[in-house]
Length: 490
Image (tube, rainbow, N blue to C red):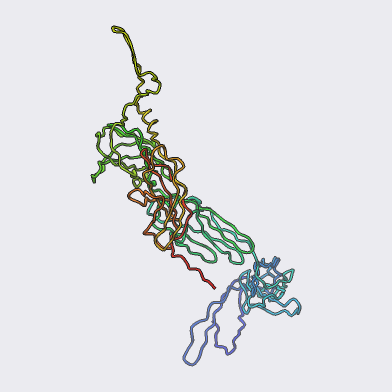
């Protein structure tokens, strides 16, 4: 403390010890007393006056925009014998050469952004270091700098913990995060093959990162998600693979084979999704409400034994994986358990003489070939094979909640009359086909009702004969359920 108050705003402190470091505070005083002390000054080492510092070694431009230029520099090699307390940034228009200070206060850091520049104008910049002895020499940016947006192609910013494969359980939430950069700010998009992400995902996009969130996920949310950023300088993409631990989809259509008086053999197609470890078959008598277990298998065919002759049964099959059982696939129709029969016939075409004359006491022989009635020949003569698929269905009428489709008969009826058609539909954002009609359609056209306006649908058709169900037809062209727009006539 000084021994007396001073009226000046500056004071020379004497009696200090060279080499020691000091801090200082100032307090104001009036008639009412002494006020609180000021903030403590920086630490100052007491020593003889020294020189200003040398110039920063390198000054470079790190970024530009239409109204700003960002600078960065390195500290001087020589600090002048005192601590550097900051830097002064100066600039001038390239065609004028009149330098003026940019920063009102000394810049402590070794970087600074000059703002409020004229778009398109060319500028020069230089930086000087300052210590207790004053301002040192300046270092100038080598070239003139134009105030304009700097272009850079998009880059995707990933760290060491980045995972491109995400595994979640059904019902959980998928959340994908990715950061990016680029100038101008890139346009970011998410995509997934054969899916409209806007129906299932919550997508959030900023200027530097994006997130995609799918809540209560199911098997249809599995697959490859692609994130793309693009600007005028280029584009970049990255893919995420999502695996959902869910039960499998239902098996394909069931067909009947080798019906006898006590058993039946069933066949079906594997589900669309893999990972199936086996199948469960269930059955019930026609009219019953109770399904009972008929057997387990890992194959796509199974023979059910111990059935009652002349009873009518319904069958269904479920696929199984580590997550559980799928929805069941029911056979398109029930079946009566009985031994196939065919009336015996004789081939008399080779007998030309139907009158036989012989002497009394002599022997005569008549050879008449009887046709075999084994299951093999029964199948041959009945030609009991499923038909070929119908033609690809065509949608010929569309409204907000219904579509009318038509198709042509199969190329081959399997050797027996086509007795009906089954129709399935699928929404665009799913892979699950759903049976539409509860009884077979006897015509080659059908009106599908109960559709949701704005959703996109596809259809496929199965043909049915006495031997079973054909494979599915090709899927129809996808169409949106919406009311037709009228034509304007001028």
